[in-house]
Amino acid sequence: MKSKKKSFELKTTQIIGLGFAILILAGSILLSLPIASADGTATPYIDALFTATTSSCVTGLVTVVTGEHWSLFGQVVILLMIQMGGLGVVSFTTLLLMIAGKRIQLKQRMLIQEAYGFDTLTGMVRMVRKMICGTLVVEGIGALLYMVVYIPRYGMAKGIWVSVFTAVSAFCNAGMDLMGADSMMPYVTHPLMNLVTMGLIIIGGLGFFVWWDLAAVLRRVCRERMSLRQSVRKLSLHSKLVLCVTAVLIFGGALMFFLLESNNPETMGNLSFGGKIWASMFQSVTLRTAGFASMDQGKLSTGSLLLGCVLMFIGGSPGGTAGGVKTVTITLLAFAVIATIVGREDVELGHRRVRMNTVMKGTCVILLQVFFLVISTFALCCLESDIPFIEVMYETFSALGTVGLTMGITEGLSVAGKLVLIASMYFGRLGPITMAVILNVNGNKKKIHRRLPDGKVFV
Image: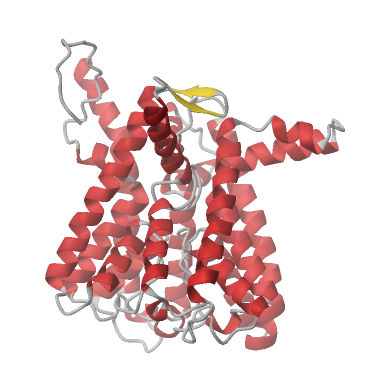
């Protein structure tokens, strides 16, 4: 009986990674078929595998131009992988079971809990249903707004398709588009394109937990006639933290990019004051794991590149479509440092004490992410010795953060270099903790309750 329990625990933690691996493998096979390319020839498997990985892991790094290389069939395959990768394989499987009228068993409910970090098994199916419906509504609104720009440019049929593709990609923080190598650069100062794209990226990156909290605020204001201020006070600590940190990172990052790039003629120097504000805001938002580019990343100053790496490392928020170590994690560790400096025994946030196991988990996430960043950067430096270090570092931060921005080196990488990025994107999408559990082949999650004598070490 004990061995059966251990086997079950192993499956619940590893099946998420296996699901993504199967999705990537199936997608790579479909994309390698001649029907998937625009010219009707078979795509080299390494490029098909890379595209399947970047789509499923909602990253956006590409070795071939999405809008030019792939046929309509290939683009549909990519869009489906982006949607499945953004929602999560577990949620997508649950949706199919619900459509088929199948009962969601305890095993599936535990997988949903594991995938999204819920602290209860109650209401799992209802939560997934709301999440999928909310996703489709937001993506649909985004697609309709994009049509205002894309239908006049591409015509009715292609304009609708490009709008749908871009809306799904933006909400899922994938950063892939059908507009060619220039991505969003032609729309760097376009108000509607900037607002819609940034809005979709931010909403997707906030996380589904925050969605429900904000929806509750609206219900209290509209139905219970509660004042907005009173209703906002009832937000959970998690939601308050996510919203505050997200706002600080977006506006703080935009200010820094404005100061760093305003006089750079190759990025923002030739734009008007208003154009510089749009470009700064978009760059700050897209670095939160979206990957659309309204400026040439290869022309950014060194300071902007380093700032970009920091934002890519942090990423979005838990329970959303974004990657990175997450806003809450980095804030938690910052408050742990403050607590140590001021001599507090507990980490305090919003007049609440944070459990020590949560702090330890956050520390583990960051240390594992740093470890894999060092490994992947070192490997890519060794394999691509002719590429400058800053470009390699920007690429690995982008892959592990599932961002998708590049300084233009992705297409020219060797097969081994592409494999390093494939592994980085896979790891970045699953997250450090999930990946560590997957690599734990014994699946031993038994807690050891013991307290040893104190030992003195110096820090």
